[in-house]
Image 1 (cartoon, rainbow, N blue to C red):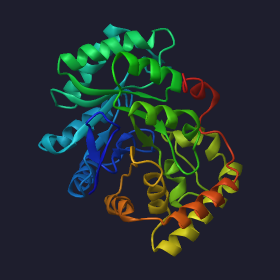
Image 2 (cartoon, rainbow, N blue to C red; image 1 turned 30 degrees about the horizontal axis):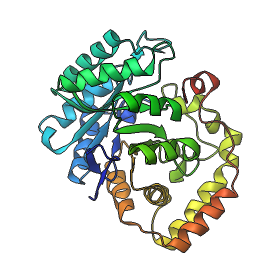
Image 3 (cartoon, rainbow, N blue to C red; image 1 turned 180 degrees about the vertical axis):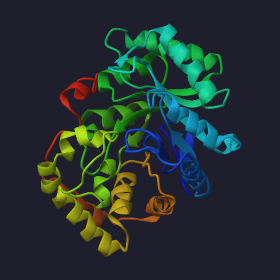
Length: 327
């Protein structure tokens, strides 16, 4: 698989990464553990090198699964994980105090079965701790060899600039897809100016952009999509328009809607690495093939004009979660 560098940090990964959350968290009933490990191994075989997880997924169990799956493959992969929450089991709140971050990193190292983390993100910005203080904590963790690079998730452009001024960021992780493009307005310019990469989570719209989910879909108690406004029945019905459009482009390019959605992201900026997730081996090869799809300048212009005319219905997060983003 082709490679990409995340900005000017020197961190090089496969052009597509793997979002591991759904292997055993927030995507319905528990899957067979050995099968999920087989999915990860299929991704490794496909040339995917970046694996993204987080302390809060489970909590802890997603990191444990990823650590088990990547055991024996450490030299071939980059592990990205996230911390910075006070995990209570109910309402997890941001906690970026130095002692909290250090404790989180130590726990992640054990669960991931590694002595260093390639890319460590602060999962959500803590409004009670100056970002400059957080950056100094990350600076020390880098000096100690516990992490190689650091980043922020769902941060504002101002926070990114302030953090980068103390200890350079390798990447910012944010939701980004053909149906969620707000980061283009203020985040993209900051990343380009500072030489920071973007890791795009939910690049397939939490599965909706694959065309496999429609207004009749129901979500189990353990699937958080049932709580998201964009997955309300009326919103899914209205948003079928963008799936229909992806299907049309897919037919023209002899591809699938998912491949078009991923290829579109890869065509936006050279510093973006999408991290689609899956629990199915067959989707690994499908996603990987998106890296080979090329749009002409005219095709991209037509696609973007069509997208601009489509109104997306429903917020991506409930109000409580929205308030944690863009800090």
